[in-house]
Length: 82
Image 1 (tube, rainbow, N blue to C red):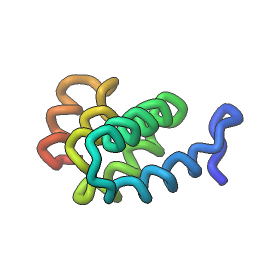
Image 2: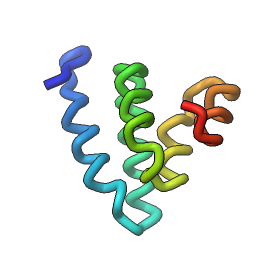
Image 3: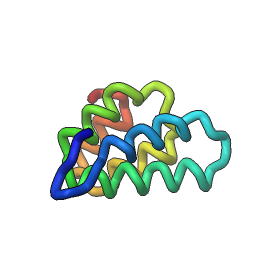
Image 4: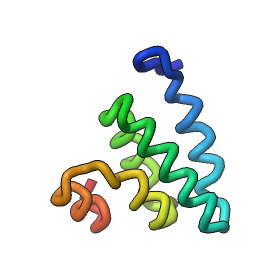
């Protein structure tokens, strides 16, 4: 289990992976929010997750997840350059 500052972030990634297939926009927002908060604990872990799941991620979830990244990095990620 990956722990960062006492937080098990691997669980968050497992839940997010399950919910990526959901078709409801509010779930996409919640997944993006969960990922963004996890990225505060470990940005490299978040980037790794995004690289692995970019293709199946709803755009809303991705936008929320990368909200705190620098503008140039967000732009590249939205374009699929991870």
